[in-house]
Image 1 (cartoon, rainbow, N blue to C red):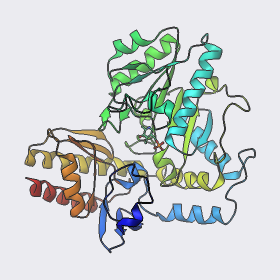
Image 2: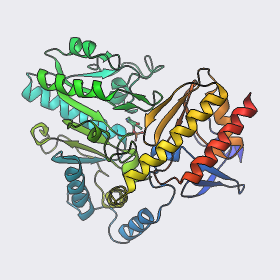
Image 3: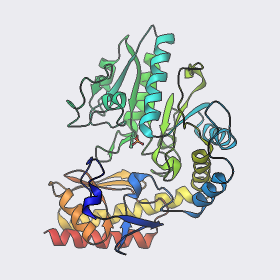
Image 4: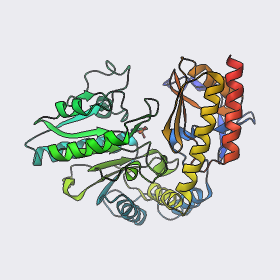
Length: 389
Ligand SMILES: *Cc1c(COP(=O)(O)O)cnc(C)c1O
């Protein structure tokens, strides 16, 4: 099989395994091995692998209308826009095909708004260790370690401040500032919460200064932290919100939502060939309906509490550090750089987990993961830790 892999550019180190099939929390490879999946396509498959409502929505829509050009309205696009604006309290939406593209659109919207409403302001204050995607502008907005000198020159206009430091944000906001942009919980940094208090203070500060607040909820949105959107736990609305990952339940779909007063795109400013296509937006509708069903989010919070408590016990047994995060976006601080070795040992035991940094593990199972599967993952991880020691 190895030679066949050479036709792909090496963009990451992958195990020499080919996955063929998925079902719920389980993945099956070409050798017939099964894996308990706590990565789920990078927090993407919020309903697990090949969930029935998503499969049905895709099959029905594929047989009805796949694409009809972004120059026309289509039925799922209109319905999903209506459902998301109702759920979020933000009046308008724009669909994209990846999180980075949604954030790129958010940056453009904020820059245009700054140009029109704030005397040409174009800067967006962003945060150290933040992650917003892999286009040049979203890389520039990110504060990911190791990216400082990659693909230079970067796009200018993204001053960085430390997360949680309100004074630093205030000092960074000037006449050139159009917006402040952040993840409510930094996902790729290792599930680092901005802190609910900090987020509320930041909302007040941005309002007082007359600049926009952009929340990147690509990882935290769609039920991941126990509410449909994380900001609903904070009691305020952002000006601009981006969604991705879980929104499509496994297919490429992302969205930009914004308050009416901020929406200043004019025809021709923004677009994209596949944006808002009926096949993907039909998938989004199926996901949104499932996540909004009575009891769904309550179950996310309960399963999250079970996973969190189990990780605390495991941490105490093996001398690791704190458990961070909320709902089913959790991380275990290891206190030593054994993350990659643990991920490999877990893989050997048929368990998929992720180490976003060498010193921590991240858990982002399907939101539909069962308590028994959580317990099974904890047992497998415990074994992997034992094998490593
Ligand atoms: C994954 C992620 C992105 C980028 O999304 P892509 O679909 O990979 O482009 C942006 N922001 C956050 C917070 C993410 O977790």
